[in-house]
Length: 407
Image (cartoon, rainbow, N blue to C red):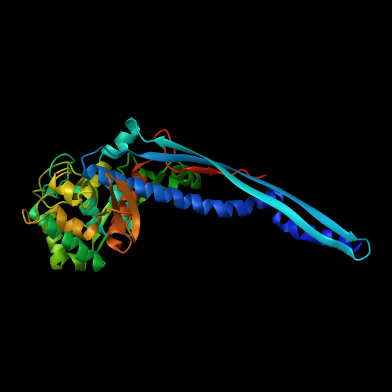
């Protein structure tokens, strides 16, 4: 009887180690979800950096997406006991308990190359001006956004990095423009965001004829009833949309930096804000305007520009294996002046220490140092830009789906 109790107690101690079906579901999710999240993010960062390095060497980028992750978990267990009897009076001379516990994760990961007409349009087409407002709302510096994303602002040219051609400097005043924006933003005297804009109406009705159901029907159809020119009696049905704007405070407009922005873009100071829209002309407007019109780069254009921030191994630079950049000092505004502050991709012959993200290419390691915050922020801005541009209607999902079946 004593032996039976001993074996029973020992086996009972093993029971907590044996998984009990779907009671492990929450633990499996907790132990796997974050690890898969980290892995997918790391791969996306490494892929982006690899493509930026490739473009420095005039190679075509290639992108793939992890479209789905399906994983199954298998567990098995076993146990037993053995007793060796020395004599029948004093009890067993030897005893033991043995057991096994096996846990296995079987993932199936689907990786899809990003290609086709829709993807080409998203990566080669011009970025929408509204993207400036989205990124500014996310906390990115407005001067960095303009430097990275914008080629021309009301006729004022930024620098250009055009893939197979050498980088060229922009208008000398573009550097003044970026610096003025930086100072205004530090003083909280310039903001970029969205404003609800109503279109022109067609016909008007008397306010007294409108019923609550009319207001509800308008909301459901994406429209609004509004007074006509401030007339409280005459109302019209309007459609509206959120439009990007840039606002400079009245105090900011009186500062040297505010006056610089207004002069360079020929803005109308009687306007409370300035509409941000696509550029429809190449020259600075001849009359004061209420609009800041921009010609945007494509995603590939942004990556081309950042590829010039890649530090080259000495041999590759001497043998001219990579695209040339604009020599420092040849223009008042050079690519170097921006990239030296915004981003720096180092090279190393062996796996680097303190790397935030690193890839191996052409026999060398290229990496962003974890201690260089500006580089990390600029790189993350491009990641957010890709997320905005790469929509899920291109025939594949941009966000991988993780499926975890548990018993």
